[in-house]
Amino acid sequence: MKITIIGSGTSTGVPEIGCTCPVCTSQDPKDNRSRCSGVIDVNGVRVLMDCGPDFREQMIRLNDFKAIDAVLVTHEHYDHVGGLDDLRPFCRFRDVPVYAEPYAAQHLRERIPYCFAENLYPGVPRILLEEVNPGVPFQVSNSEGTKVEVLPIRIMHGKLPILGFRVGKMAWITDMLTMPESEYEKLQGLDVLVMNALRPQPHGTHQSISEALGNVKRLAPKETYFVHMSHHAGLHEEAEKLLPPHVHFAYDGLEIII
Image 1 (cartoon, rainbow, N blue to C red):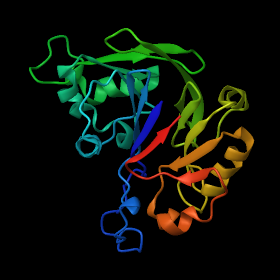
Image 2 (image 1 turned 90 degrees about the vertical axis):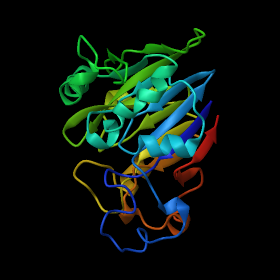
Image 3 (image 1 turned 135 degrees about the vertical axis):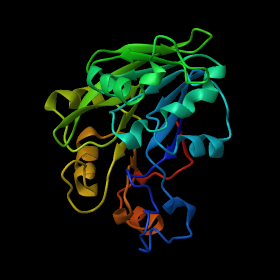
């Protein structure tokens, strides 16, 4: 399995418009964080984790134009779904299956109804919207028929129920503040955990870095990579030194091999 972090930033991205802080003006490419997203390649099946407004530029930078076999949507907020229209080039390979829970799926139908009309306008992305539910595994597959099982995990984005996803021994969790007790058991035995850690200070809907570290200690994955950082998380080179062994701040373009 290869996990590529194509976006490691929070909803405003880093640099944030109008900000002149040391992080937003840093010349270190690792401090330039586009909206949170990732690509997972497992057994020839290619899965996109969310599809935010930076998706087009992220895929141009990735420079690896292949079919996307599934898009896993954590929730309907714009920084996680604003790039769905840019799936159009990938529809040359196949219609793109997009998996979301019913609440988020309904919001997508309302937000981009032209993608789900009975008679599609020429050129719109051909999206196959599939509804999934927390705790109920489902399979995604490539055009050769190779299948990969995905387990949706219930997490809480403040008071909003959203999804995380486990694929094999990797889990992707973003925008979490808390998680029901029942879900911790589903995240045992991980080789890699990708999880949000917004900033040092507490936040009403996202984990702080210390809260994220508390969950890392409880879940005990072999390696953890923090994503969805704001500029308040600090300069990558300096902040990374403050983390314990086997915990890292991710950055755009990072590749993780399991």
